Length: 256
Image 1 (spheres, rainbow, N blue to C red):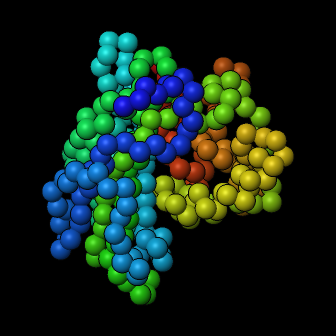
Image 2 (cartoon, rainbow, N blue to C red):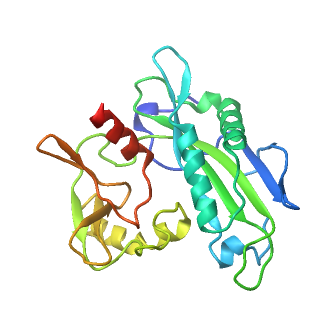
């Protein structure tokens, strides 16, 4: 492999060696399969395409100073995916099977894990989609869980420096008591117009206000919001916010 410029990696997709897949058929999850193909064969009537039966997660693997590879809070991502599955009626993948898939795909693509202190990481994308053919709004009877990885740099172009944000009032990201607490693709489609407006205005990203009263900060475009005031960690309590594993970690650190 040509040596990558680890310090200048973008946050984007790069082909790696393998992905892993588990199929759900006849009310059971199958065995883990290793695949080098980047595409998914899918029926044109698959529920993920028509009715949004699609969920995903995002986590990272890092190479430590001691050379060991560590994955950040894998069990929390498994639990959040399980919550999303309950929210949009997809079969849950156990934490053990989730861990099996994540560890396998990271080990298979270990040569793509950036070196220590490069500022880069190995991004891990688990994806669960309804593949069963269905015309009519009902849950599918077949699903595919796939995990791929890609080396990435920081999410924002400025890296770890501060970024300018703008409050967007014209658009809501998610409705109260809707799907905002689940990591589904539709929530991100709903943010595209606001995010484009923020970028067009010269900002890195956007703040959303609560959809009900338009007076409280609800979430950032790419993450939960928190602030520190009078030595107190403050973060919104809302029924439309995705539970952030980073935010949960920061709250624990603040308490400790």
